[in-house]
Amino acid sequence: MMLAAIGREFSRQLSEYKQFKVNLLFANLGIFFLITGFLNYFDSQQDTFELFILLFTWYFSSHSITHPTYFIEDEIADRTIINVIQSRRSIFGMLFIKIIVQILLDLVKAIPLFCLVALVQQIAFPTD
Image (cartoon, rainbow, N blue to C red; front, side, top):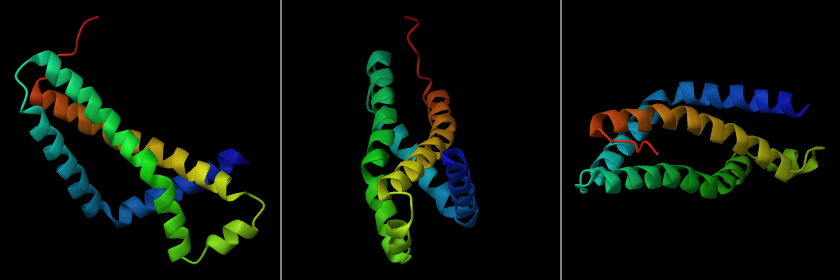
């Protein structure tokens, strides 16, 4: 039952991404330039690698903080919050499913983006 709900939410998010693919492209391009700009300020490879890891962590931590409020705001704006409250699933269950799907989609977006940044910036990963 939980996997079915995650599957429905995943397909809903993908269809939303298809509608806003230009916005998604420019948002990721903006993140690419932001991260590349930050990384250009450091000379040593160790500092660049540490900042790269910190920026990757920042990407996910900023999303994890804002996602619950955005999801509740969307439900209120769509006037579906009352349906969520009256359903068998709790509002926390709904938030949990939406956050899991969003983290998976953010991971799918972030890994290629950060790999591209690592290639462009020639970041040396430590061997240890």
